[in-house]
Amino acid sequence: MNAVPQPQRTPAPPRLWVTTILFSSTALAALILVPLYGVLYGYHWYQWLAFAVYGALCGFSITAGYHRLWSHRTYEAHWSLRLLFALFGAAALQNSILIWCSGHRRHHRHVDDNEHDPYSARRGFWFSHIGWMLRDYPSGKLDFDNAKDLQRDKIVLWQHNHYVPITLAMNLGLPLALGLATGDVFGMLLLAGVLRIVVNHHTTFFINSLAHIWGRRPYTDENSARDNDLLAFFTFGEGYHNYHHIFQTDYRNGIRWYQWDPTKWLIRTASWLGLARNLKTVPAMRIQRAILTMQFKRAEQKLQQSSHRERWRQLLEKEAQEFSAALSEWKELQSRRYENARERLLAKWESAAIRTRVKELEYSLKMQRKRLAIMMEQFHLCPSAA
Image 1 (cartoon, rainbow, N blue to C red):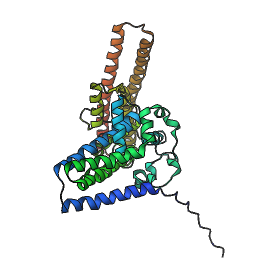
Image 2: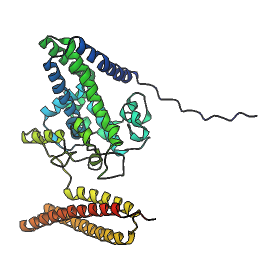
Image 3: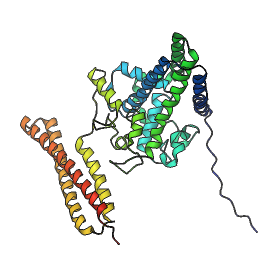
Image 4: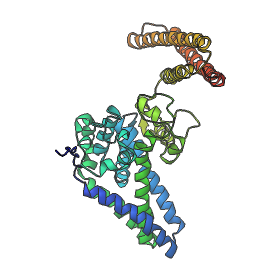
């Protein structure tokens, strides 16, 4: 008998030993050396304070700097703030601004595309969390064609060209100096150095992995990104990821006043101090449109399970017509507003009238959201079709 040919397995890409050794050694040290030293010698309160402050500076340098400033250009920052983000971003040990932001822009452009998204969540939790950095995958190849603006930023180029010495100074030099000043070098290196790096790493990595697996999708289901309040707490507001993936030009991730987004608060505070400007936000009507679009989609899905389809369908169609009419009027008002700004032909009172009507439309969409929510509850209460 002829042997059945076996399918050939695609060989794994070459391992990247620098990152593999870095992640494994820091993780092992955090799991073994940090608690062992604590049991044998103990840590002082100022070492924990250094861990917290240093970790926060690194975390904000990634969220407010690498992510919202450089990757998405959601605001502009004074050179001093950019320099601070460049230094402590290097301390976070997540690569240079140029490499990080270029890869992140590719992620947004090709989200969930296994061939082009550097850390596609559709390739599994491990891959999107850390695996994509351990091997030389084709999807992770460096290509700065999408970051020409960053290549014109002197601070970005300075950090990129001197990344290794800056990283060594921030990750070894600064904790060492703090240890010498306080009299316990090893304890400071373990907390402000090793443990801080591991925590910074995995809180960021969870946005690439867990925030694409676990959570809500109130704004879009066109990609795998989720909103997750727990992740937002540990990542300085980055956990509102479903919102971010549809409205990436907004400097906010948590748009409600009660949502935990300290990165948003930091950027806003910097603007009050003159360190940031041109903070970009998404118009409320666009946000309402996204939420209602998802509500209509889910209402239609629930309607298929209702035994009173026709009665509910009429109500749903009426709501859909109102929604469409409100969007059409909003688009017309937006056109008139832009025309007014460009040609300056309309009187001030007419501009005010346009703004007032836009606010009324925003309120009407909020009320429609509430009506749809009530309808969804009624769908649930109605007996299913036989």
